Image 1 (cartoon, helix red, strand yellow):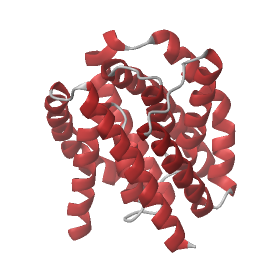
Image 2 (image 1 turned 60 degrees about the horizontal axis):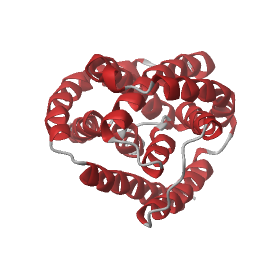
Image 3 (image 1 turned 60 degrees about the vertical axis):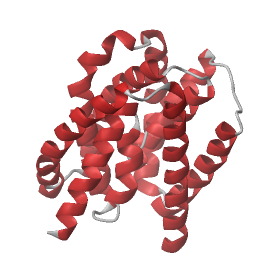
Length: 241
């Protein structure tokens, strides 16, 4: 019962972040779900619930989607999926998490010190590819997009809308790929079903929060999410070695 309460709290907070920022669910949920479930179960639960959130919100944000950028991100992610599947099947997840944590912390410091870069077609494809790799391997496509949008100083409406639209595609493809590669079990679907009420409560609260997030506060949220995730993954990886 205690674990169930913790699980619901994780999903509620992650849903609020996802709705208000467009990218918070996997960054918040995945590291903590790994404390309660096996890696494959945590990743699949994260993907299923993220799909539900994206489906629920997509019609509300569709006017702010950058469709040209979205197409490039999707094409890039398709190229990244095979590598992500290989990592999911063969690479030691602890070592991979350690590498990701170091990269996240370095990039967070770059953003805090106001390192900026321009959006280019090649970079759009690369970011999509990295997101594809991370989605199928650890269920966490958000950090590359988050860093890219923050580094190019993209507005919060465009960031949220384009990210949600991208997630709708990449999570669906990743879930189908994982089901094909390793299958699933009833615990994943039962746990996802139990979490749906918390997800929809989070959707409502997140929509309210989004109205009060100005661009500066949005950036602070970005730094906290990236830095917090990086620190958590680093500590967890070191303790697991």
